[in-house]
Length: 412
Image 1 (cartoon, rainbow, N blue to C red):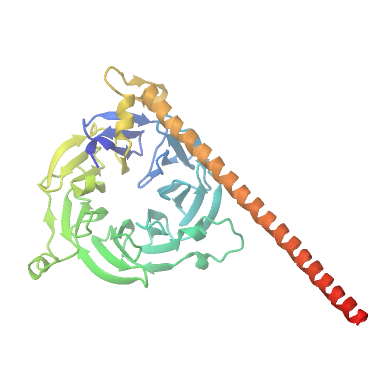
Image 2 (cartoon, rainbow, N blue to C red):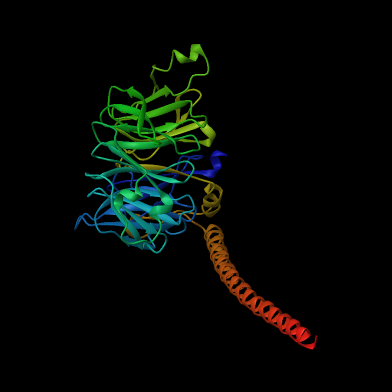
């Protein structure tokens, strides 16, 4: 995928969600009104951006839902407590939020209805992720544990369930808070977790078996894998990125399995997130100092610096496949005008219309899907009626045949 189709978004505990065009390095949008804690930013499908919000006045929590064409949240989703980490199903239909109490909440999008909540950890939920195949929600907690739960059970509206029935596995993973979890490969069997205890660990989710421990000189807050799952890049609290290896194709490569390579450039603060993008050609990292680095993976060097070094960053996500649309809205001659709350409104009429047309099409498809479901129900009902009529006809025919046979015998 071309870098022209990729947008980097960052959140902050002090300010707006900012979108950067990695082709030019400039900020192209600011979504206002969110003070978002760590891991509190997620893409909900292609249509929405969701951000956790903690009120500075009341310390109450909510989740803000944004459209791409507006700088202000169109929906504020209430939650029972402050939440930080978020995760969303790939289609954007459901959102998961981790609370300070250790509870995880399932919300329907865009309504915000809470479908389910359950106690996952004994301390605050620190991170959430979806397995690469989309089947599992995997969470980490400040209590050092990891939990895996089948998503199909979390999105069902059921009552009277035992919480243990929702969990596939729950096990002790680290001596400190779990800071991030990444699924390895397309399946859901293996994950790698990192922690403030200065380790990253590989786990089998089939039985919670620890497969490998990698030790670092500092706390690790995020990890990214190359597309082949051979190399990893760990985000250090010391501002450095550590490159390591997960697989060895030969005996020579096996010798480097215990080596850590430090990338040359250093952030001015603790790195909070690192994401692989552009089919493994580039890496993007964000730090508490407000800077976002774009790396060329092959050379291990920073090729662009994003950010104004003023706002602290709490999370970073990469949106693919929307860059061209956004650039159509901020084409030559379009000025980014200021709006209330310091938001920047970069989106032009063409992009707004394009996205709205897409949403309208999705609504039509949704209605069509519901109509199809109703048609199937009606067809099944009609088939049932015909089956009952057929039974009556056969019964009547059988009765008629018996009467005829009886009359024939009487004539004899």
